[in-house]
Structures are given as structure tokens and as C-alpha cells.
Image (cartoon, rainbow, N blue to C red; front, side):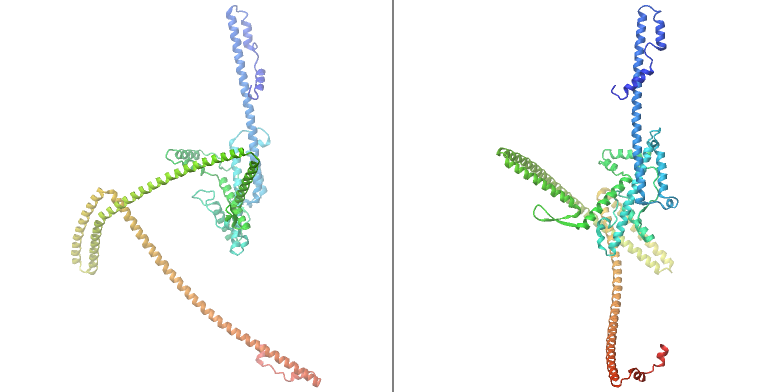
Length: 598
């Protein structure tokens, strides 16, 4: 009765099930009972009645269960339809928003437009969501998984477009900073250099680094900064994604999780599970960090990188502008606390002395408890300090013991190694001398053979001595393998250190030579520059002198012109004739060379 739809199931069962006493069984009972007399007939009729009632109860329960299952299936269908419609609406909205931030792939843009792509998307989504038409449909998890993957890919494309625009903004700001325009230097901290491994694993490069490199490549090839991000491929609903089930990957993840949760793994199971992020999560983390970085840069551009804020000790402290909100919140909390304390003190002034005394006792007890906690903490810190001192003394003793062992090993093995080095050096000198004799006496083959045999005998003796020394050394190594291992490690370390030092010295010498050559070229360039400057100064003096002479010539011409004008005016006043005819008489003819040049 408590289940919904139980009454409906009961009615269906009552209608579908014939009542007791009807049908074939009831007819048979009614035909046979009157013919049998005595107690057997009564027992048989009672058994038939009990069986009929049990059959009716079973059918009623089955009908109620069917009705409950049908109602639950109907609810599942409604929830499935609601989820599919929400996903379908999200996909339509996201796909229609793609043209605002991204461009179609070049191969797709040549064949169709965004309207065609939207129509294809509508058909693909309708094929995955047949429940939108209102007819009958099957509850398929694959369709929901495909819609979820499609929605994630669309969101990733939108986030990538926004991050690409952020990378373009960073490139523009970098160009402005290179050109000397400091008014747009607000993105220096946000986009000054590409950040790595944002939202990615340690072995992968960051998303912003890839986008910044793509922007640089596009600017290098096209000569301009693009406006929108060009999709490598258009998202489709049939591609697998983060929600797709992969049996092999699931088994590998289960094996890794079991191995990480095994004893002695150091609790790496949580870290292993937390590191598996989807592409959407990485894009969202990168986008959030870019927004936070841009907000920080805008605050730096608006208020400066640092602000001097007074603190509680009547002094000023330096606070970053990106932390102003936190500082304002702290001051507001402090103001609220002080306001509350002020109101409490005002209220306490109106209360009785007993209430104040109780309040002070309570505060005194709290202070006593705090003092006890502080004493316990001090005691614990003292114990930790003593333990650290004991560990320090133990480490120092161990260090002294290791130093004694090292000195003992050095004292035992260094003389033997020196003797071996001397013998090896002697053998090498002998071999060098034999080679020199072989080069000098190449014509005397017989003497060379005899000398070679003698050298071989000497070498065999040396080899025997070396064999005996090696046997002795092997016995010593077998007696003390630990010391020999330590000695070999230190000798290897010393050799590598010497080789590294020699390599560093060689590199230093090469770099020093190159630096000297560069300095010499710079000195020669400076001398040539000084010579050109001296020539330029001499040319400037000549030009200045010519300017002075030209100025004097112009002054003399002006004086002659004024004298000429004065004479002409006097001539005209005295004679009354025009002076042009007089000037034509004294006008000199131009040379033929000037006429030809003209």
C-alpha cells in the first residue's frame, strides 16, 4: 500500500483475475462437491478455497510490482528526456557561440559556412536525442555519453579561443613595450613570458606556451596578428571523449590504484588519482589563472605594483595592489571586531558590577587555559629541541667515525698505490724508450728483433710483478671489500672532478681568447670611429668657414646694392633721365663659357 501505484495495480489484478468460485476450478468443485458426502468433501473444498486465495494474493502482488516498475520506468524516461534536452540546449548554445571566438578550419571554410555547420550539428544532435520529438525512445547511455563528450569539446574550443585572444593580447603588449609605449605595460606580469605546465603534467608544455608559439608563427608567416583562433578540426558528436568507457584503460587505472594503495606505497593513491584531469578541466584552470593574472596586472596598472598601507603599530607596510581586497577585508573585520567590543563595553557599563565580574572571571579563565596551552607548547618545543640536539651529536659522532675510517683507509692503501704508480710509470717509460729505439734503428731489423725480445722479457717480468701485485691487491680487496669500494668511489669522484676542472679550464681559455679577439675588434672599431669623428670635425670647420665667407659676401653685396641705389637716385635727381640706359652702357658681357654652361 505504501508504494505509489499499488491501488492501480490492485484494480488491474482484480479486473484481470476471475474471482474465487468461478472458472474451471470453481465449476469442477461445484460439480464434484455435492456428489461426495462426509468430511472428505469439506476438507477438499477448504483446500480449494485456500489455494484460490493464495493465487489471488500472488497475482495482486505481481500486478502491484508491475505497476511500480512501470511508474519507475516512466520516471526514468522523464529524467532521461530532461537530461537530454538540457544537454541538447547547452550544445546548441555553445556551438552557436563558437563564431565569436574561433574560426572554421581552412578546409571546412572553403566548403561551407557557419550556418551549414550549425545545420549539421542540429541533425547530429537530433540523431543522438530522438526524445526531443516526443515519441517513443530507448534509454541509451551511449547517446548521453556522446552528448557529454560533444559539450566538453565545444567548451574546450571556446576556452581555447579565449586563451588564444589572451596570447594575441600578450604579443600586442610586447610589441608596444618594444616600441617604447609604456601606457599599455599593464600586461607585463600577466603576459610577459609564457608560463609553462599550466594545468598540465610535468612532462607536457603549458597550453599558453603552445598558443604563444602559434601566435609567433602566424605573425612571422602572415606579418600580422590574427583576430581569432583557427580550429584544427571542427568538433563532432561521434568522437570519443572523457566520458567514453575504455575497458583496457579502466583495467590499467584499477591496477595503478591497487598498486598505489598497497602497503608501503606512501599514500600515493590519492595523488595518482588527482593527477588525471580532463582536457576541459585543464582549459578551465588555465582560463581562470589567466583571468586572475589579468586582474592582477590591471590592478598594477591602475594603482601601481605596491601601496603603502598603515598597520596597527602606526607604521606603514608595503602591500601589493593585487592584495588590496584582502587588506580591505582584514581592515573591515578589524573594524567590525572593534565596533562589537565597543558596543559590548557600552553595554557592560550599564550592567551591574556582578555581571562585569563574571565576565572578567570568564576571560581570566580563558587566559589561564591559553597560558596552559602555551606552556604545553613550550614544553613540547623544548623536548623537540633536546631531541634535535641529541640527533646532532649522534650525527657528529658518526661523522668523526667516518673520518677516522677514511684516514685509516688512506694510510693503508696510498703507499701501495704510489708504489704501483711508480712501477707503471717505469714500465711506460721503458715502452716509450723501446718505441724510440725502434724508430731510430728501423734499418737494422736484426738488432731491432733482439732488442724487442729483450724488451719483451723485461715486460714479462714487469707483468709478473704486476700479476703478483694484483694477487696481493685481490687478497686485500677480499679482506676488506667495503674499504675498497669506498676508495674506488672517491677515486672516481676525484678523477671526474679533475676532468671537469680541466674541461672548465679549457672552456675558460677558449672563451677568454674569444673575448680578447672581440675586445681587439672593438678597439679597432673604436679607433676607426674616432678617426671618422676627427674627419667629421674637420669637415664641420671647413663648412663653418665657408658659411662665414658666404655671409660676408652677402653683406658686401647688400652694401653695394645700397650704394648703387643711392647713386641711381642722385643721378636721376640731377639729370632727370632713367638710369637703366646708363647701366646698360657699363654692363659687362658674359663669357662664352658661361653662355654655353647656361
